Amino acid sequence: MADRRRGSLALRGIKVGAAAFVVSALLAWPSQAAMRHWAAYLALPLLLAIVLTGILFDVVGVAATRASEIPFHARSAKGLPGARQAIRMVRQADKVALFCSDVVGDLAGTLSGAAAVAVAVHLFVGGSRALWAGMLAVAAVTALTIGGKAVGKAYAIRRANAVVGRVARALAWAERLLGREILVGAPKGRWKG
Image (cartoon, rainbow, N blue to C red; front, side, top):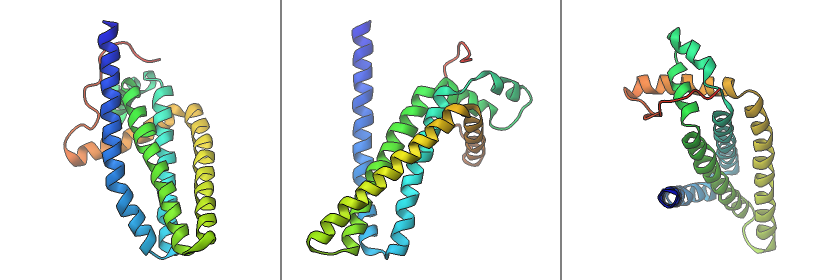
């Protein structure tokens, strides 16, 4: 039984890693090409948007692992929008954290580093200035990302239910728009309290 579980976990890791490789490869080239050819006043906001996306998704992943399911049952009984989605998020916290923190968060970190180098090289074409600019750009993006995630994770831990509630309301709106559930297959069982 333990061997089967280990094999299943290894297969899951391989699948997620392969999917991240494909998505990263598909997004890296267009983002680098755009950063190289856009003016700095367009490229820098896009770069900041990528960094902010990674930070926000990391906050959601941490909040899902810390949130309690119990308050959302009372909201679900009242028929409030987002309550059922919040329960599904908490029950599937491992999947939410994997997608938000590991896939989207890490992918945004990788893309922002590559985009920072592209912007720096575009601004300082040629010679040692481009090398130093690239190194400084990556260092600045790394500092911004890590600092932002540190603040975001502290907030997510303290305000987990509030974060999950906001995201769940957005999920409820998206599900109404799409006409289908986004997080499906939540396991039935004990409440996470």
